[in-house]
Every structure is written in C-alpha cells, then in structure tokens.
Image (cartoon, rainbow, N blue to C red; front, side, top):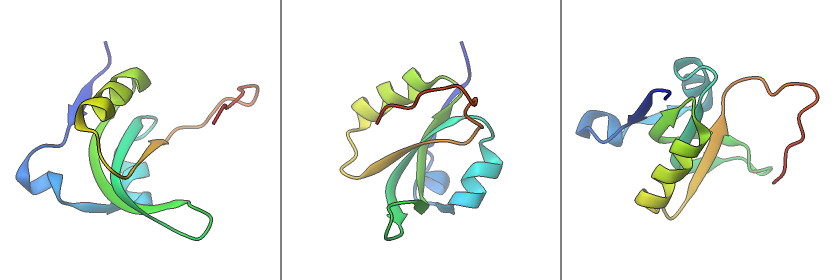
Length: 87
C-alpha cells in the first residue's frame, strides 16, 4: 500500500499552500485540498492540504470521512497521453 498522510496536526491543518507549493511538495500524488481558492475558470490557486497519497482511492475515502464543505481533488503528476479523464 502507498503512503497515506493526513494533515491533522495544528501546525499543518490550517496552513494555506499555493498550487505551486502543493505540486512541488507532493509530486505525483493525489491531494485533497480543503477550501480551495480558485480563479474565474475554477483552477485551484491555493488551499489547505488535508491529505495526500499515491493511492487515489485512499484520498477519496478520507474525503468521505472528513466531509469538507468545499474541496478540490488534485493529481500532481503527469497523466499518460492515452488516458481518458471522466469528470
């Protein structure tokens, strides 16, 4: 099983990170971002990282447990060229 990290420590839980910081710190991982700040096209600019893992399903399960009112699910890696993405 891949590493699954939850940011529940007081120091980390309320820290707002930019998208660039998230992307560089959690390379090729799924990231649950709570209360994301977005631009007019809904691209994530910043937010609070609540959990991250290389296993997408683990992050989805944690989102169900946390039940955040507003959140974004990000993948910081490169999606293979022949992959279909369903929204």
